[in-house]
Length: 143
Image (cartoon, rainbow, N blue to C red; front, side, top):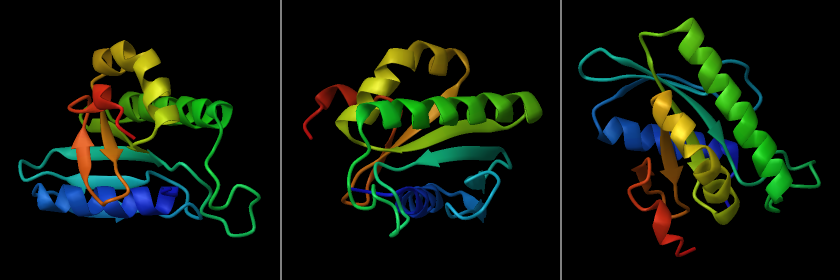
């Protein structure tokens, strides 16, 4: 199970492989945009990341998956952060990086039309270190 820090690290590695320069990459202890990346065309991409477990070793959720309610809350917070980013930086692309698991898939399926309307990309992060964007494989659900 991936925590938020791992999701950020894997997403940054993926973006670099796609030609992005990582301007900012924050951990859960930092405040601000989780990832700011600059594309080869100069376009800025701002991503809010959420993991499937706590990254804090002192937390009761450390190495235990978040339940459906916690994931829904995290996705709601990520959606708010993305919408706020769009309002503050309309020239930027916006995304959410999420651990690819059943709870995140279910939460995103319920709001996918809104994400499309707002042009918010979903970066799905797998435990094997791979990433896919939006719904390239979401329906597979072979977890």
